[in-house]
Structures are given as structure tokens and as C-alpha cells.
Image (tube, rainbow, N blue to C red):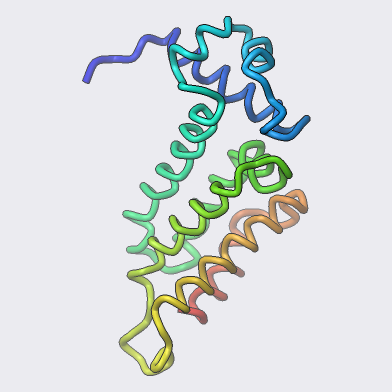
Length: 182
């Protein structure tokens, strides 16, 4: 696979930043291609060279973050809950603007929360304790839904409230709760 031209990467980054900035100001449905172009300092036609429309742009931006979180799942499952969650909360902190916009914006397509939940539930699948009897009689499906929804809810609360606890403290508390749940 060849190297991607740095100008292309710079343009795509400008467009991704532009859509997030505009979503902080108005509903996603009200954002126009011209506004995106103006904010990113590119021509309208340039947007269509990279994306089908604004929905494709947002979808690809979401996909990047979901994939990066998913890549962390590969090694995180080898760690205890607290150590595994610290990098996730650090990632949310590092990408605060994206997550705060996606979780707080009224005009954000609801697919983001759904995709985030599905990603976490998939990651939690191998974490259910079936060795001891503490989960006897509990459905994997219900347990995953419970833990995933709780995790997304805590992340949303943390971000919406300006991250009142540092990532390692969130990992410690959420890790303890997830360990009890799964």
C-alpha cells in the first residue's frame, strides 16, 4: 500500500475538524457542504473528491474512532479491568472535542451511541465470568447490554461534566464496577 499524499491527509483532517466545529454550533442536519468547505478552507468540489456527502464524512470520522477503540480491545483483554481501562479514558480525554460533540450534540445522528455501545459489548463478550457461580442463571446478552450501557453512560456523564476525575481514577472506579457486573 503506497503512501498517502500529505496534502490529502491535511485536507481530510481539515474537513474532519470543520464538521466537529460546526456541530458544536448547530445541528448536523443544518450544516451545509458550503459551510464545511468554508470552515475547512477548501472548495466544495474538494469535499466530493474525498467524501460522498457530509454523512459520509461524519461516518468515516466515527469509524476511525470506533476502529481505534476496537484495536485497543485486542490487548486490553489481557489486563485487569483497571489497567485495561486507563488507556480508554486517556483516549476519551485526548479526543475530548470529538466525544463531547458526538455525545452532547442534539443534532448528532443517533448511530454514534449505538455503534459505540455495540463496540464495547463486543469487547466485553470474552470478559463474562463463567468460572464461578456468581453469574449462574444470567444471560450473556442481558449482562453485555447492562455493562455496555452502563459504560457508555458513565463515559457520557464524565465528558458532559468536564471530566471531573482524571482518567486513572475513572478507570479504577469503572473497572471495579465492571468487574462486579461481568
